[in-house]
Every structure is written in structure tokens, then in C-alpha cells.
Image 1 (spheres, protein in one colour):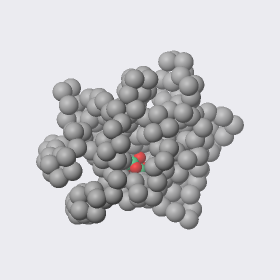
Image 2: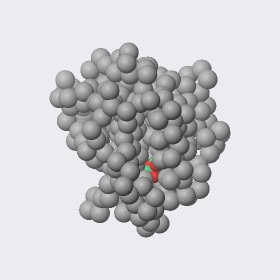
Image 3: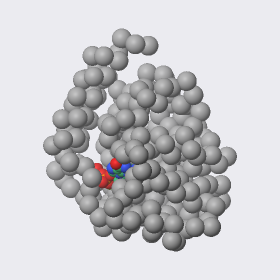
Image 4: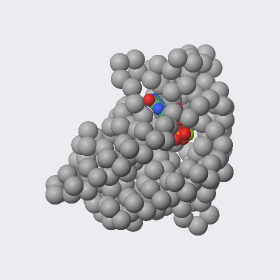
Length: 237
Ligand SMILES: Nc1nc2c(ncn2[C@@H]2O[C@H](COP(=O)(O)OP(=O)(O)O)[C@@H](O)[C@H]2O)c(=O)[nH]1
Ligand SMILES: [Mg+2]
């Protein structure tokens, strides 16, 4: 078994080096064969250059620089399609998603197709913003009732999965846009009857840098995405 950790970055110079070092040390300690694939969209703050300065020559760290394309979801898929692991973890690079959970998520994928972090199962939560915690909770209820999905956190974006579950899936139907790609990912996998276990995760404070999420824009975009799945995709099998 080999694990690929996919880290999408945009202006994450403040946290990325520490995060990579922490993930390397956790996976080394747990004796999990691994690589870390970073997909940077030419961050103006020099995230990619910083990674090259510290990790050039380290075969476990694979930085990818995209100069022609930009966007969270396509960056994640770019990483997935360029990685060599048979298991994959995707996470934020600002410490919102605590890296200490990676070994548990990976272990669970021995038994489930997907281990998905959730703020809304018992033990989960968000230390960052109460407004975002409850706003996201209400939006997840909307997703639940509109799409009839069982998952409680369709906006988490911290998950592990067996790469083979993407066989036969057209990535263009999922990996576009921003965090709404994860709604499409979980919806598609539930339609395909994949085994998903939600694992409690407590979001931590961002370590430096700024959030790229514009709440008003994303609310509009995510609502459109949910309605598109509900009224356009459902007829297709
Ligand atoms: N490659 C790439 N990464 C992105 C882009 N937008 C956001 N990210 C990364 O996606 C993750 C989530 O963004 P973040 O700002 O933490 O959003 P928040 O957690 O909702 O506040 C972070 O690791 C960002 O660096 C993008 O356009 N391209
Ligand atoms: Mg974040």
C-alpha cells in the first residue's frame, strides 16, 4: 500500500513547510509508505519557491506548479491524476484540517471506500468560527434534504479514499469549481453505493495567510451546484 497526500496550495507560504514536515513525521512514525504531492497555482507569495528551497532532493515531496490553470477542485484532481499511491488523502494546507488524523483516515480505508472527516458527527466541531460552523451545518441540512444524501458534512474536504473508486468516473463531472466539488464527489459515491464512514474532525485555526473562501460568493455557487445536481444530474444513471 502506498499513500499519496494531495495538498492544494494558493498563498500558503506561512504554513506549508511546517505542514509538510509534520505530515512526513507522522507517516514516517506510522510506517506508512507515502509521498506528498503539492499542487500550487503559481501563488504570488512564493509558496512553490519556498517548497523547492526546503524540499528539493526529497523524493517523498512532489511539488507541482500550475501556471495555466487555476482553481481548487481542478488542482486536487491534477494531484490525484499525477500521484503514484493507491490510497489518497486530500486536505487543506492551513492546519484547518489537523494532520494527526491522517493515520486513522487511512486505516479506515482498509475497510471502507472513503473515510470522510465530518464536523457534524459526535466528537466533531470547529474551533474557528461559530458563524461558519452553524452556517455550514444549515447548508448541509439543505444538501441532505435536496439530494437525499446520508453524509453529514458535504463541505469538509478532508478525506481518504482508495483511488480505484474513481475508475469509470468522469472527473469532469466532479472536479470543477471550488469546495462544491466535494458535494458532487460524495453524492456520486453514494449513488455508486460506495462504503463511506464519516470520522469526527475538529477544525483548527488557520496558521497564517488568509482564507480563499468568499462566503457570499460560495453560498451562491454552492446553492447553484446543489440545485444543478438535483435537477440536471439525477436523471442520468
Ligand atoms: N491550488 C489551489 N489551491 C487552492 C485554491 N484556492 C484555495 N486553495 C487551497 O485550498 C485549501 C482551502 O482553502 P482555504 O483558504 O483554507 O479555505 P477555507 O478553509 O474555506 O477558509 C487551502 O489549502 C488553499 O490553499 C486554488 O485556486 N488553487
Ligand atoms: Mg482552510
